[in-house]
Image (cartoon, rainbow, N blue to C red; front, side):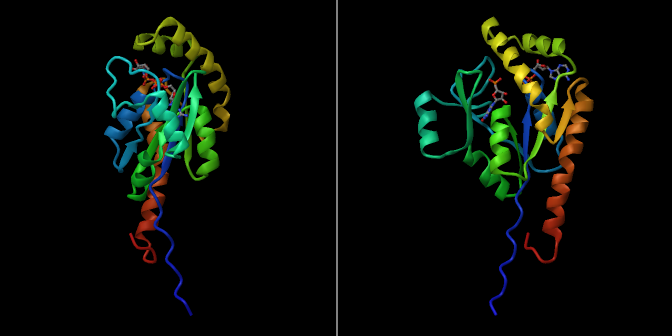
Length: 209
Ligand code: ADP
Ligand code: 5GP
């Protein structure tokens, strides 16, 4: 009788973080990764929007031209993509996710609610977290205090934020970003079981690490 193939080694967890622009996603993810006891990485996604002051190509985003982006779509290099704020393309290159998960890294996708819905269809085991502002005034104030948007772009983001907030109940976990440390703690608590489950699989005597 042929020997049964071992189960494939489980991959690092995929974590989707969504929420309206200005709610604090980048700030929290930066702290989360800096303090993470597990191997954890933010996927650098691609966009056709221009860099904002202080953004670094290849670190903040891959800044692509429209032609480059459309070629990546045609050649199926993107796991998901969407047009956000009715204008620019944003998308997740496969090679920012798959090789790292195979090595056991947790990968965080900071993407909009359309992208999150697509990932839910493609990768059902992903953990979906929605970051919520404590109230509308705080969201507007944070977006303004970042100081990197024209009034027109800011208003477009606030408009989109209303639809995004209405999608929050489709997520596995909702974290309110009022006090930063509290939100960070809640994020860590939401993510931890995904890593302990992975460790348990790797330590099982039947499955090679
Ligand atoms: P996003 O990535 O969701 O667009 P950012 O991380 O850029 O949002 O945060 C927007 C602004 O809000 C930044 O100026 C950031 O310093 C600030 N901010 C984020 N979280 C908090 C918080 N808990 N309390 C106060 N200010 C915050
Ligand atoms: P920003 O222009 O403020 O950096 O991002 C605007 C929005 O695009 C945010 O909601 C951000 O999460 C989302 N976004 C960034 N990268 C991607 C991506 O690869 N795919 C999708 N669907 N959304 C993204």
